Length: 67
Image (cartoon, rainbow, N blue to C red; front, side, top):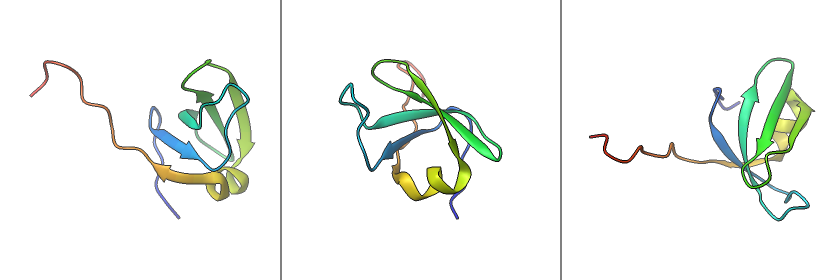
């Protein structure tokens, strides 16, 4: 079982209808709420379905100017 945190970006196995497969985690609990990185639509999934659908956890984006 992987560790997930708020604000983390994940790549899902299936694409959203807008064409993006990258999502941001905005709620963690028994259910996960994730937000599409392209169109901003949010979806709530049960924990088991979310964990099964994650393809990879994306590395944190670095802020410009931070060292």
